[in-house]
Length: 105
Length: 325
Image 1 (cartoon, each protein chain N blue to C red):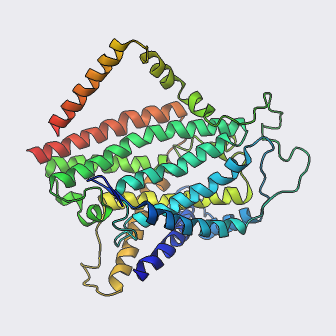
Image 2 (cartoon, each protein chain N blue to C red):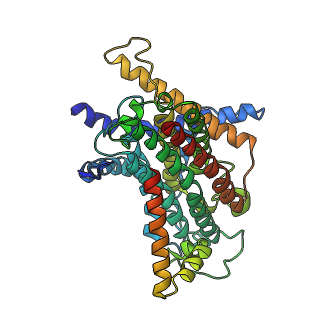
Image 3 (cartoon, rainbow over the protein chains, first blue to last red):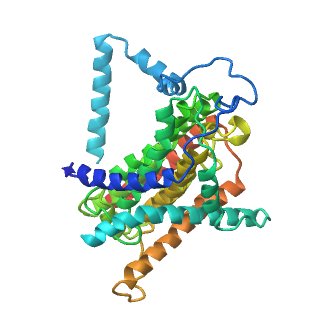
């Protein structure tokens, strides 16, 4: 059992239950058709009847994360300037906020 | 102990049946509100059966193992949540996990949708995956504030383990707050009701599938049994999300009122819990999707980060103020 003082979690019990649930889900899954009959263009990704202009096999699953959070990552890159003074400013600011929160609570 | 094991086996399966039943009721209620008759209540069961006999197409350019495993992981994780939630009676895995674990588990089905979408090799699914991710970041903030507020109120009233769902469901928060705190709780409950359609991907927050814009988005390439598993995960997640809202804000039971004992007491409390779950889903999902239209993705972020975040912060401040006065 993992306890934090405010919460607890038993990974072993969790894994046992997940194993049982996975077995149930596998039974449901096995009731379905496993594959499909190959026909022309059947396994082409749908693109409103047209061909996808740039075929891009998804090897980098993080692509969408970076794309969607581009502005956030841009901001993060800018504040990681590599200058130690900047990091110290951030540290002081963060500690001040945390002390403020602790005092408030 | 034997009873616990039996319940651990029965509850996840019951979650599927209850989730599909509510989907049927939801469709009838929505239809009646729109002046239609609607499908029979068992239609979602037929939908699943139909999907299971359909071909399971995997696009040539998809990452096969990721594409196929995500629906499986989504359903397993969401079924596991039910074991940690009080369903009118104490959670099946009482003492083996808490509210923080439930919050983490709630993220897994959404992440599975995102990864499944990215693995599809479809531009529509990639856009849907990105939208789902942005939506997740939008609604998690007010959800976290709601949970922290309840935990804070329990902590300040001297409750022991404030993240234990048994403690939370055994201590209705409405009796712990003063008048400002009651106003704060009402605001936070309202915000939580607003988070539920976002979590469940229902109108007006169905931006990640948006049939008329991105042809089903994340589900554009899913078919057959994979789509059936996502469909079931959605049904179970509705029950889990509504059960969480009930545990946090409406954890009342009826067995004491009617003086029930023995096996009748948990049965009555479970049925009463289901009634509350259906009511929460009716307000937050059914009515919401009938009276609103889909928001643009940019609006989803601003809607969640402006109104529910500000309102739930205000609620938290009212609760804190009420306990300090």
